[in-house]
Length: 251
Image 1 (cartoon, rainbow, N blue to C red):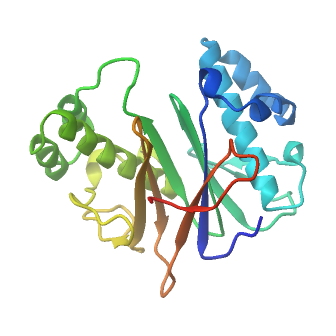
Image 2: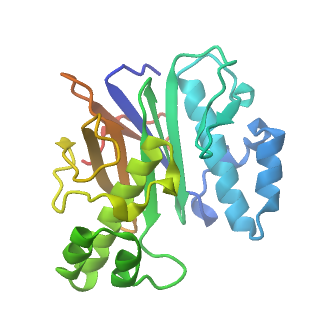
C-alpha cells in the first residue's frame, strides 16, 4: 500500500472477546520468540491476547508498506524503551507507534518522522476520578480546565488532554522521563492544525496534533513534529475489513 511522505496511516482493530479479528488471532505465528514469551508472562490471558494482537497488527501493517514478510521484522528500543525498526532491516524509512487499551488497538505508520499515538478506554475496569488524576499529573492550567467542566463533559475533557499529552511524550520517545505536568496542552485545541503548546520540553519544533473518538468508548490522539511548508494528511483504516478503506482521520 502506498505511503506518501506527507501521510500518516492509522490502523484500528477491536481486540477483546468476540470482537477480536480472527485473522489476527490466527497469525500469531509471525511473532518473535521474545514477543511470544512476553505474551505468556501476562497474568491475565486477556492482557496477553491484547498484547499479541497488537504486535501481529503492527507486523502485518508494516508489511503492507514494504516487501518484507511479517515474521521477518526485527525491532530495537531506545534508552526509554521506544521500539523502532532495526537498522539491519532493508526497508523504507518507516516509523511507527503502537498503542492498545481495553477494547482497541491502534498503529500509526509514517515515513521518516517522529510519531506518537495514544488510545484510552473511557470505560476502564475501575472508576476514574478525572479531578484526582488531573491534580496528580496535569499542569496548573490544565487542572483549572478540568475544574471548568462537570459530569460527562469533565470526563471527556480529561481524556482529551490525557491522550494528547501521552501522544506527545510517545512521539518524543522519552516516555514519562518528560513529566506530564511540565507542559500544557492547548485548552481548546484545533486538533487538525499545528498547535503552539506552552512550556513544551522541545522548543525546536512546532507540533501538530489530531484527535478523534473512533468509538463512543475510546479517545485517540496523534502527535508529530510540524514540518515546514508541508501539509500532513492522516488516514485511518479498519483492520477488520477484508479490503480496508482509506478514511480521513477525525471524520
